Amino acid sequence: MKKTVVDLLLLENKQLNKDNFLLKLQSPVPVSDIFPGQFVNVEIKEAQEIFLRRPFSVLDVDYQNQTISLLVKILGRGSKKLTETQPGVQISTILPLGKSFTLPEKNDRILLIGGGSGVAPMLFLAKLCGLDPENVHILIGARSISDHVDIEEYKPFGNFYFATEDGSLGEKGYVTNHPVFTNHLNEFTKIYTCGPDLMMKAIGRIALDKQIFCEVSLENMMACGFGVCLCCVEDTKAGHKCVCTDGPVFNVNDLKW
Amino acid sequence: MVNLGIRIHELDFKNPIMLASGTCGFGEEIADFLDLSRLGGIVVKGTTLKHREGNAYPRMAETPSGMLNAVGLQNKGVDNFIANIYPRIKDIDTHIIVNVNGSTIEDYVALTERLNELDKIPAIELNISCPNVKEGGMAFGISCPSAEAVVKAVRKVYSKTLIVKLSPNVTNIADIARAVESQGADSVSLINTLLGMAVNAETRKPVLSTITGGLSGPAIKPIALRMVWQVYNAVKIPVMGMGGIMNATDAIEFMIAGASTVQVGTAIFIDPTIPVQIVDGLTLYMERHKMQSVSELIGSLQC
Image (cartoon, rainbow over all chains, first blue to last red; front, side, top):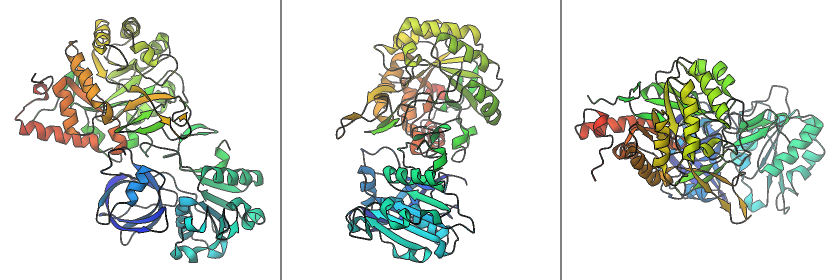
């Protein structure tokens, strides 16, 4: 898919909870095909201290209305500035970037595990995977119910489970302590995950051990997003690979986890 | 109609706008975004005799108006370049220039000999200024005798256009420029990145795995402009200017300070269409100032 630099109009900027915002952006031209796990690199304007673009995984695309939705969690100066942007402003983006998750096959039963803003590509994958919702299981982890991103419209696409560190929503503990993970992992043919590094490593190692197909989406710091700066490399079994172009999605088998 | 063409040694560039090594891959990575044939030249990723994995992650830190990198010349080596990359890029209608690196003079010479065989590589950029490798790299570019020695050795085996990329991490860059000119360099390009550092105050650890790295972006533009002007006044060979060029006005400033061509680097990370926008902006500027040829612009600083 051809990558382009395009100005998108910020249509909506909705605060979901303390740190998470849902941004809906409209393209002046038809949106090219974007698959779950791919990302857009967003320019943060009028912020002198912010020089580089910020990458965000795509939450959803509406091809008919030419809109792209991003889930933006405040992690630093760049994401904070972006969440302060008012609707009506044009935002420069580069898209679509990176490789997507491998879409499941007809007979797969999948477990999607999202942590923090990593839920975005998991929800997008649940929506687009084409499986019977009975075979789509989505486990979401957060520190507390106040950090949980609740997006009602994705409920029909699968069975949802929750884990919070303080027990305020779902099971108390990490996603790897949740019964769906501890007791039922062997029932799944594919595991997909996006979230904090430690969470993905814990999941990835267990998947490796149980020899279950597992793809993870990495978030290494990048400058360009399209494979020229070579800054975001992950040390894989095949040497340094660019997270922006060889990933961000990797099969755990290829990583040194 | 303005004439953007410029001659460097025996090489005619269709315009003075080039892509800087290490910021554009081999050109093909950014071909979706811009028509590469509209550029004067592309200096492709730094190449070494043997495959290099580069430095460990993290390799990048954002800084005020710029960034630090410590990639460390990650590349698959010259054999891979000749076998796999060269056939794919050789017919792009612009000058493809290879950035040449080595740990020893023998490495530089052996690599140059290989590249001399390639018909569609009309020039090399000898990198004696990479701050991110333990051996060679910048070590050759920070003293006149070592800079002379490497240029002298490479000149013996290279018959085409030889550009030498200079380090700003020196006391007097004009001395280094004169030294490489004396050994037969056809042009000098400057500046490579400035040695810098970033610290995480919370963890009290360096941000980069290598502790220090190379600073680029608009933060270094005033230093780069000053050095281009100093070198322009010190040597007779043409100067290629770079360092924080983000738009046509920046490029024009470098040319006024003495650059015959300019290289766009870090700006590509922000917007890979910028180099072509600069070609258009330069044309408009020349029309507005009623200039026929870019040579009227080069070194036209009114002091």
